[in-house]
Image (tube, rainbow, N blue to C red; front, side):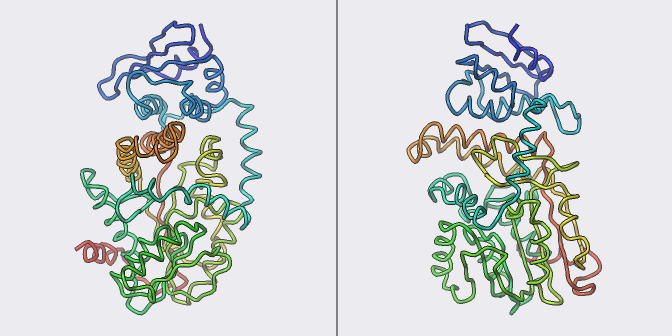
Amino acid sequence: MAMIDMFLSRAVKRGELTVIHPDGTARLFGSPDPDLAPVTIRFASWAAERAILLDPALGAGEAFMDGRLVIEQGDILALLNLLTSNNKWEAATGNLDPGLLKRGFDNVRYRIDRINMARRSKRNVAHHYDLSATLYDLFLDADRQYSMAYFTDPANTLEQAQADKKAHIVAKLAIRPGMRVLDIGCGWGGMALYIHEKTGADVLGITLSEEQLKIARERAEAAGVADRVKFDLIDYRHVTGPFDRIVSVGMFEHVGTAHYRTFFRKCRELLAADGVMLLHTIGRLGKPGVTDAFTAKYIFPGGYIPALSEIAQGYEGLRLFLTDVEVLRLHYAYTLQAWYDRAVAAREQIVALYDERFFNMWTFYLAGSLTAFRNGGLVNYQLQFSRSRSELPITRDYMAQAEQLLRG
């Protein structure tokens, strides 16, 4: 019996997984389940099997990218969904965790990578966000919202859900005309433009991606609001204020735990005395962890998804009022399903832009992220802060009322 057979016999109980080894022998794991489509995979080398045993995520990702793990029935999403459905976060089986030696290595790598100095931050951002603009057009919505959408109904389109996400966030900020707003990690400018359009506020969006900056400025010019919605290529540590409101969506994952204190201290410094801030970030359930090796190597070098306790250590003692916390569970799973479907439908265009290996890497990343939200320990957190005890209403009713107006 191959060693990976022992691993899979523990990891797969529900759903059928057929494995064909390099010598042609086949083994069936699990049992039929109406909620899980059968999957058949074939290994082109014994080395691919050994790599997966050492580190399931990195080993499977690289084997799939290189064609050493071939999916003959189903697709990469079906495979990862079958495996993670058998090993849900709440069950705490640990069957898909890397080996002890690999976990020790990853802990050392994580401690080095988390020292995310400014020069490394720009390089890390460029690794992901300075990819071809065409790539993002192929799987994102028209506004290029590259963060969790907000599904008031799981049947909603991605476009509707992304518009509702912006309304959900802006409603919490209680922005009034004439205010000055800072958007930290502004992406391609969609949130900043939305804030100005809906509230009349002046907005400064900042990014470390030259590609995003170029497109954001072009959008502001095209909308005729470049004098009111401005964008700059600058690290948040070098911004000067004050601002009435700060919003940051999907950027905190790149800050690095060693700099959480710096981040919150800087945000407090930038906020006016009655200023309000909304932080939207992916978060991990439970205790702190490490970034998996596949994501760190191929997708988000220097990135880290924080536990709620780690975020708290960043702002505690800084005299910021934590005024609201929301945990969003399945919204990113729905978002990633839409992105995955669009990426798969655009396979020929993505391969033409890059190559087959890149397409496999990208779909593995999207499928892995999707199943991490569907079955794993990832959620989204929205944390609202204020420097003032009395700037915001004392109940949450105003959020729902403002959201309805924005969506209307």
